Amino acid sequence: MLKKRYARGEIDKEEFE
Image 1 (cartoon, rainbow, N blue to C red):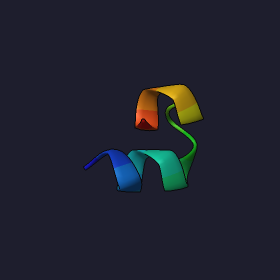
Image 2: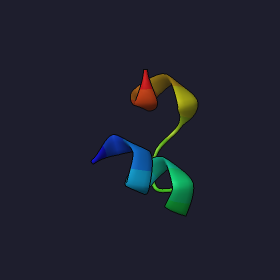
Image 3: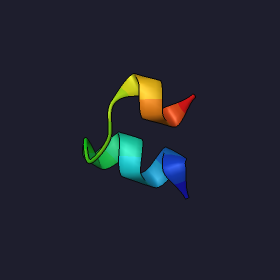
Image 4: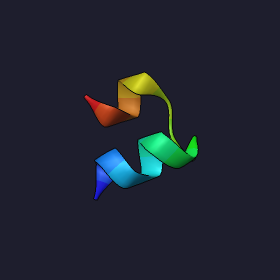
């Protein structure tokens, strides 16, 4: 899930959206 990746700092906010 993108949320998990974002929480781990694997992706940028832009990728999350």
